[in-house]
Amino acid sequence: MDVREALYTTRAMRRVKPDPIPADVQARILDAAIRAPSGGNAQSWRFLLVDDPDVKARLAPLYQDAIAKLWQTAYRERLELAAARPDDPESASLLRVQASAQHLADHFESVPLFLLAFARGDPSGGSIFPAVWSAQLAARAEGVGSALTSVLGIFHGEEAMEILGVPPGKGWTMACCVSFGYPSGRWGVAVRRPVQEVAFRNTWGTPVGFEITEPLWQAP
Ligand SMILES: Cc1cc2nc3c(=O)[nH]c(=O)nc-3n(C[C@H](O)[C@H](O)[C@H](O)COP(=O)(O)O)c2cc1C
Image 1: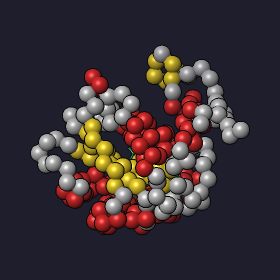
Image 2 (image 1 turned 120 degrees about the vertical axis):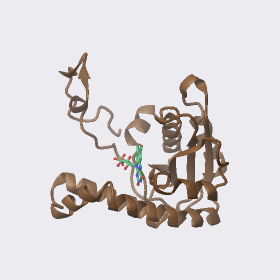
Image 3 (image 1 turned 135 degrees about the vertical axis):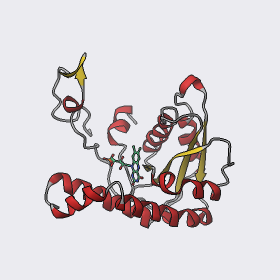
């Protein structure tokens, strides 16, 4: 796959089929992930693949409680506003993300594979998220969808780490939990605010010098 196609179309793919992901595909995803950069090439990371139904069944209630807490806390105000104005495009987009994220939580146990990423001595996440994103891009190249999630670690990290047997007191923190599965929907180009709204040149606020009205990669 053209690298640009992967970059443009690796969306949060939360609606997936329960079909297992073959071991050779998993191996290619992880082997690509660990090629990513980390500060000083420290590679202070661990990756845990979870496909055991018993482990998923133990994590699922924690994940579901975490997503409920997310709606009640950080997202509460925005969701209330969106519910009051559902036709507003921004509201509609937020409500779509919520429905999709809730779907993942509700179907947690039927997601075939999770990758949990752990980091140590990396408070910014700058040395773990390149590897996580590489895993997602590598999965995309295999036709496997993924969704990076952080709610489990935020609200129930300690309980989840205990279930997963992460050694306590060694400084490991759960950076994220990424779901993987063959998509039930279609791939599409990620919708984002255009470059000129979020990028400057030389000094903050100075126009970057180009206007991009359509994504520069299009499906052939
Ligand atoms: C740091 C980070 C944390 C995220 N946490 C969650 C999460 O807890 N649950 C979830 O469903 N999606 C989560 N996402 C996925 C985002 O919601 C998603 O990337 C964003 O809505 C863009 O989706 P799109 O690529 O399909 O347009 C997270 C993404 C990032 C980068």
